[in-house]
Image 1: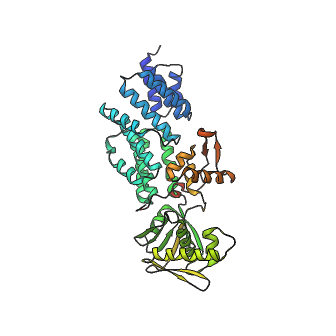
Image 2: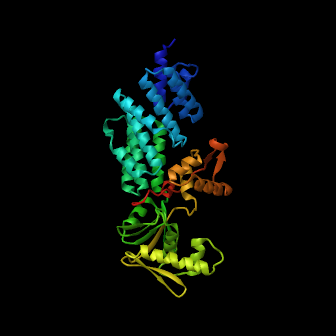
Length: 409
């Protein structure tokens, strides 16, 4: 008969190697604290998150108050399950306390994992500056290969959101090497999945009636060029290094985009009203509102472009650039940001979506209802347990539909 300690150790090794079935074969019928914790982690790896959370809570109670390291590891596992299940309101203070306990007791690998979970949470909700600062706080060289892989995946995610293709590719190359050293197939598969995003279309270039899909490097090159860019994805207008945020001015952004797509021609007033205000019938009040909004656009762009009235409408003329380009999302979808979050294949609550997007829950719920009517998302559950899921948008870098906050927002 194999001693209990050896069974526990063998189960732990199986989990570390990404083999949950091998772990369960050894401890599936045991109810001691260590077995409950390992069973919880195994069930999480198999995707049964509800059962995993229940087992981990039972394990934390079974360990008792004196087993501080074991209880901290249970908190860490619960936090990871919450993040995977997109419960973005989980108690961050509990995770910070667990991380401090693990670090104090010498469990540097799990303390680093807790640190990276906090960073991943910040990345998910779009707080890129904070995520980057948190990532820089740990030196990855002394960490095990699994931790180094997670760290580089986070670095790549931040670089992709910042449209830094070279930095993203370098981080993924480091992640690939670390994953090979770890020897866990699921980890290597996650790295390869992230690599596909760099070769998928990341945006659309619209200029003088020509529409082309761009990869991440091409988007980065366009934003670094001397062109006058109406960036519909990041809600800004850019002339060289001069960036004007329109994140809080959706009407002005819509007008700038319409004028940019038509450049060097002008756009008829009725067309601008229909595109901007969504009205099929144009009357004097619409034309008056259009003049008011055009005056506001003229004022906000006065340092980089002129907005002039023509006989039939309005024309955009850049002051310095020789070309006007509109940079749009790879898919032209009204609720693209919601789809981008749902495209990770996980189940999201409307409250978690609202938190990640920085929008009201009612706004997100309207978007979900619209996407559900178009059969692009599917709900499950009722009331507080209601969750939303969608398949990934095929062939597109969906994270780029989630613009980071612009300076000054």
